[in-house]
Image 1: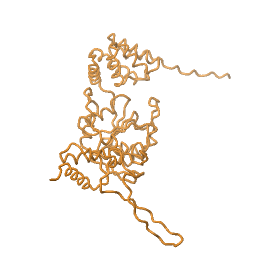
Image 2 (image 1 turned 90 degrees about the vertical axis):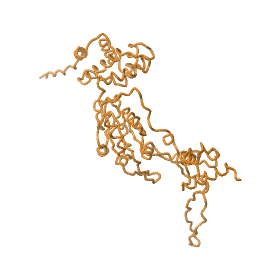
Image 3 (image 1 turned 30 degrees about the vertical axis):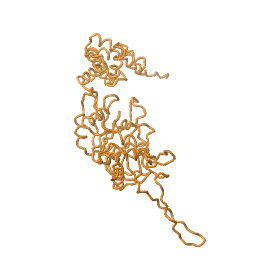
Length: 403
């Protein structure tokens, strides 16, 4: 009677061969094991002779052959064909590197303190449709643009891949590149390619920081198969793949200099986005709810402090619009203050530490304004007092002609 273990290994090998592939991934091995009713195939995966890359294994019996160029005997002027040689899969062949993006769960976790507002319902509709529907979201830094996309995916159980642009981000970083691992050239998909293959929602964060390196996304933004030029492979996006771009500008640069190093994006590139959403600050009632949740999460539930922080930030933003100040307090900074208050249990210390990023004049004026809020002044009074303190520059005096 044959040993059950031997039979199991034979069935496993037969199922590997049945894939018709020269190599299989760890996830494909798990699928085969599940069909066989076993937890794993350690005898196969731990055998280094079967391993050809990170998370990639060769299929016994399906060796790959590489064509060898014809040679010419110049003396006899007769073309000869050499014998074809079998290149073992453990040799210097190009394989795909299996990265964390391909093996980890890409569905983001639900953030319990998130409070939806603004365009969130539209985001849910777009992502739930599983259609290719690229959109551009613009708005001030720290007002929840990227989080709204992430939490929409979390609510719907959709895969989410986020890549942040920098001036140095290039085509290889986005689509993929060859890398040298243990003396062997292997291909590693970039986040854009991974998202397309898996039908994930791709978030290109701070897209206006990479203007010189975005032409490689032109085809991707059409939702059509795109070419990985370095390996001559066409990638057809899976169902559900779409793109959400976030930026502090509309791709026209920053005239006031608040968002340094943002670039003017190519008009043809911007035209590929179906819609542009302008995300403003959360309404006061929503922001108050956010800060109350954050304070409670850090063990310092304090509804009065939350109310005063939100009123303070609202006055500063309105003053900013009127040209009275050059900086604003973002929702993200209010969250920072909440976390700091959770550590030090001191309101003014938390505020002061989180204002240190501003210049001295701005910091002192913001601190002074908060003391007035803390004393109970209402928004209208604070706005009037703040605008009264604005010192407008004197108009240059016309020089008198000496003649």
